Image 1 (tube, one colour):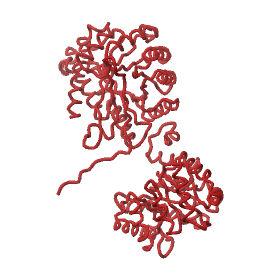
Image 2 (image 1 turned 60 degrees about the horizontal axis):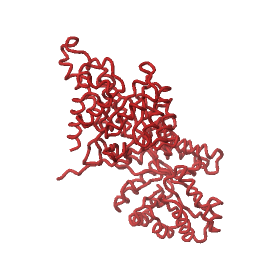
Image 3 (image 1 turned 45 degrees about the vertical axis):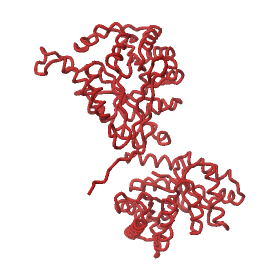
Image 4 (image 1 turned 135 degrees about the vertical axis):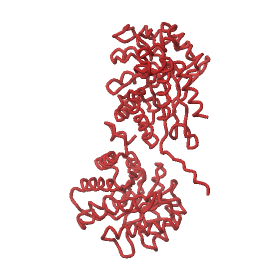
Length: 315
Length: 261
């Protein structure tokens, strides 16, 4: 007797979001659109996440040795850094992080940030995710300026959070960009931020949620469970949770001791080069199962490994 | 919870007058406002005093469907009203209602199958309204079996344990709650449950308070749909909150607003 085919039928689906523009050799990226849980092709539509390479607009200090080995020669050249990511690694997006704007670092002006952002945007054919310096007051100036400078490019800007979302929302609405809504590992606040942003007339369909990422060994399980709960709520019909979701893998995993301590400090842990890359790759891979739509990553080999895994899961 | 809006009922003076005068605007306004307030289905009832129930029902159905796109619940005590009205419905309708009496089930179940309708079934039978929980459950079981025999999926069956006025038979409320719990265990997947909420506060004081308190109690006992007044904002807020407390909606600070999105 043949077993009856059992397929889940979900009430809701995830919004489809297309970033970037076409023409002049440029290409867009489309994320979201799932009608079932990740990679269950027999049951519905499920789409691969995009990978964004994290590029800084100033040379990072104290990055782990494997990262310095991979990118050290372009630390001072965000354009070259971004181009290598697209041309050699085939990443879908560039995450340009305007670290130099931080008042604790270079305190770069909005004009200086616009210059870098425009240079990177013009140098690569893929859409950008512009990430501020995480200082609310400074970001409100810088991101507004950069958003205006890149008006009409349909990029992604972040971060908007519960206590500081209005300025960025106004900019993204006026300049036709999508927005990242951040919540601090609190699913109820994530839903609230999505509502607050959409209450300003910003379409929910153009919000990407960033529920905060915990790296392997440093909060991963909690972050995973929140992402999964949010996905299940969306598939069960909750329109305010039906946004694509982001995970910031590189920044979180390369903080870990396990990605920084070399063989002299922790000989029982094996070679650092492999270890750091695996820490990032494994964290990213695990989030695939929760339904992540944008992975912001750092190391070339971690990126390549995850791309292969995604291709396998999508085949 | 599935909300069936009850306001388009000839029992209300404004609706009765609108039917008599063929004033579409009153009906359209009630339809739109109920849907905006969160109703999923609109109950349509010409009222007890109509001298042309079929004509009045068809006029109501047409008037509502011209203006909005929601499923309708055809509500009448006269069997001859149903077929013409169901045939006019653009979306799969609700039949409000059959009892558990064999003659009624034999009439309404084939209609439900013919018009792809959902069926609201009251746990009353040839002997009348049961006064015990078990009496209600027994009739519910008979309704369920009859539905299965006619091929009506449980997903289209809405069993009503009969809401009696607290002013008249105060001990019945608790029995109704217990009956709701038992109905959900009758099959897997279980049939839906429904109540005509306003009956509980008939002729009492504090009608709205009684209605919303009873609704919350019923939701806690497994009620998954109700015929009620969606224009009562406190009632809708209580319903949304009860479902939140049962983990049916993800909490956020603006959860009342979120429900309506």
